Amino acid sequence: MSNLASPSRDLWSYARIWPGLAKWAGWGLLALIYAPLAWLALLSFSERPLSGIPYPLSLTNYITLVKTPGWTGPFLISLGIAVLVGLITAVVACFVGRAIPRSPRAGTIVLIALLPLFIPGVALGAALFIFLRVLLGLNLGYWSIMLGHVIWSFPFALIMVLVLTTRFDHRLLEAASDLGAKSWRRFWDIEFPLLRPAIIGAGLFGFLLSFNEVQRSIFLRGTATTMPIWNWTMASSQQSQIPIIFSLATLILAVVLPLLCLVFWFIFVRIEKGR
Amino acid sequence: MMRNLYQRLNLADGRWALPCFIGVWSFLVIAPLVVLVVFSFFQTQFFMTVYKPSFYTWNDLFSSGRFEVTLRTLRIALTVTVIDLAIGFPFALWLAKGKTSRTIQAMALALLTIPFFIDLSSRIIVWRPILDEHGLINNFLLASHLVSQPQHWLLYTEWPVHFVMVIDNFPMMVLPIYLAINVIDDTLIAACEDLGGSPLRVLRDVILPLSLPGILGGIVFTLGSSLAAWVEPSMLGGGFVDVLSNSISSAYSALRVPMVAALSTFVVVLLAVLLCILALVMRRFVRFGEVFRSMKP
Image (cartoon, one colour):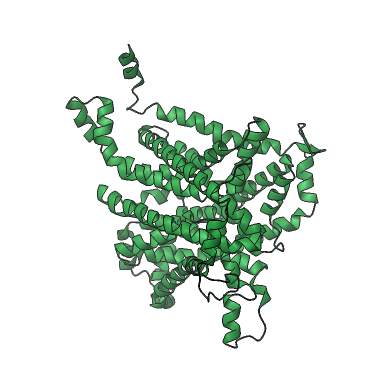
């Protein structure tokens, strides 16, 4: 270890500038994520949203949006699919997440369950399309979109549930058994309340991931249309429709952002307390 | 009788969940991926899929000018990943070990996670009125007399594709690295400092080796999503940035199923090969088994 005591060579690494640089570069990139969203919201009130200058302001786009038919159907369908996906992922993640810590091959099972995270969305969409449509000959539709969304959001939900189940104190369950509780009652009265923040978080994650999913849906849609697919076709085809998308995206943000704050309140306040 | 059956199944116990899950999951996730690879060895003739194994589709994939497309996809994906790593790793380090308060950490994590849930097309489409020739940036540049002509390269070139992909993939790079750095035991860092290690030595000999799983994870997610990126090149590239995912979607609309399969398999294989190279290079510097032993209890 001849080079251990030679701090003079690394003096530059003591400079105060490095943490500051790291911090502000990161915040800068975060700002670049959020500033366009604010700009989008502002442009949605503009009379000429494609001109780059938001003035004069008006509600024209929102009035056109209300008069334009065709988006309410996909919107409601996306909402329905997202609710179902949220419910399914929450329930499945709850049961699988409880069973995994007790399994002798927990590591392998978690890896298999997290597989969809590592496969690019287009590839997984194509794989499911070929499997369901070409090989099994099924008619694709809302059900296959939903299936794709469940597969996509399940890994996230599972991670959330595992955070709580891996450090779950099993003595609590033994105590309940000793006091004469049957297994079902033990689950509802002891285990479920303790896991509830993670399960609700998992459901909300499933809902939000499904509500905005487009890459897999395009392969799995059949002839069905969801909100993100409608957005995508409008955005990539007709210039004249773009102002409507701005107002629609703003409305959706107004719904999604408060929901997300709720999710993070659950994660950081409730789960932290559960530690 | 019913009660007996119920007891035997023991629904609330939940031991049945894992075998069921593995069964369903292999049918829904693993089987389609296998089928995907198998289908890439079939071919399309007269708009029909011919189920006879051959390398025809793979030959076609590499012969029809796709080499250039593959190189471009790889170049864009690697550039984006390197930039994200260069900004993401220091930020994650600052967030986890920079004496940052709990509230700021929670806020940054929330801000990093929220973009996952916002519709990608509307997030990307908004860059058009910002970057185009009558857009916000050009208006600003012209008004401040920095340039005399509107800048056309700001939109519909490779530049905005890179730029927006760096922004969109940033959270995927930071989150895994943050999680990995966050579990490093503070006493190891303190020990290194007490022995006279400079911040550079702490970084190189303690933090970097111990956060490698997170760095690898961040690279997987960023590379994977930028290799298969689709929305950014088609919306901001204006047809001039042809990448592999464009080939996938055009093969899909032409119903050339084996080509879709071959291209998708190719993207996954490309990702796997890049990761293997990375893992081999990194293995020279760290033993992965030791990483887990040094975590906080």
